Amino acid sequence: MADEVSYAIPLQQLQRLIMQPIRIGGLTTMLLDALSAEHEMDWAHPPHRHPWYEFNYVSEGRLYTTSAGVDFKIEAGQAYLIPPGVVHSHRHLPGESDDGFCLRWQIVQEESYSGVRMAEEAEFMQCFSLVRPYALKPEIVAGLLCLRPDMSLLALQTAFANWLTGLFEDWRAASALPQVKSQDPGDLVVRQTMLFLHAYYANELRVQDIATALHVSYRNLARLFRKQTGLTVVEQLNDIRVRQAKKLLLETDMPMKQIALAVGLKNEYYFSTLFKQIAMTTPSDFRGLRGEARDRSVSK
Image (cartoon, rainbow, N blue to C red; front, side, top):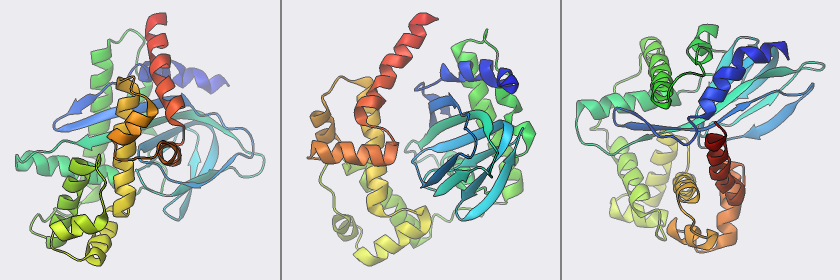
């Protein structure tokens, strides 16, 4: 398509950032994928969710997306963002198609007890996690479309970090997010549960064990966690396990059985099934990304 030229070069530069950690204060961002998203006429994708942020830019055509039950239209030049865990679907009207690109990334907040900085990072995470069932203004993508082939990797990382923080500042000004009340008992229970999940995901971990340690009932823990995160405790645990498995798949040559054990899953078959449900690909195919990235770097 003619409009593909407008994003072909920036997309190639973004692909250089895949699996390269980018620090923003106490946050670590990892671009998981940057791919062309040309969809044929009358394309439709059923409801699904994933543990990463998904940013889609439409350069030509149009499509309809349903996010958290709200249906909205995306025209050429517009984009939209789907936060982790939000159920969404896509479709064309009869006879329509679209072209553009898709970015997928994760943001991890490192554990810190430094007061103000931690609150600002929590606000960043909260702002990006808001469901935005509407088309984002066209100028939002401008910071990505200006990426050049002569930019160094450091310059690209800085540009991507600046783009994300620019979105945050723009949305922060309009969101009027309520201040997180650290003294809220329910909030403390959820934060402490997250600490348990990150500390003990590699072990056999039951929700009842966490509830007992926090001196709350199983029912109360489950209710508070689902209310504040939108996920069950088990869903969050599985997301953490798959996220850790991704690191081991890309950074080590450990066999699948050993990786399954390292993330708290004794059954290799269940590990593969769970990984595919959450990551939308098999562990073997995901590990193949390491070889593809190496081949791309060699060819440059």
